[in-house]
Length: 117
Image (cartoon, rainbow, N blue to C red; front, top):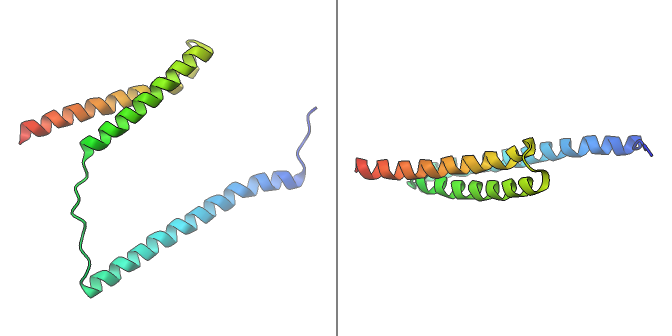
């Protein structure tokens, strides 16, 4: 029962991702363009204030670390139960160890920032 999709279906399958990527690129371009124009107008009128928010790398890495750790843990348990010890287990171990590395970075960063001042 090897049925070959019709020519129209093959064309649609090919065109849909291309149209999606082009449309998304156009939306992102105009979003950035209008944001740029708005900033230029605010600077000309003297009402633009640069955001002075400082990015907190420690909190971000802790959040990302926990998220990655628990996703990796869940995937690892799933792959162990489904396939046993195989190469598929890497799909869970990689995010698990990335999460551990991010949590370790957060701990080291916090201790070094406390030590420095």
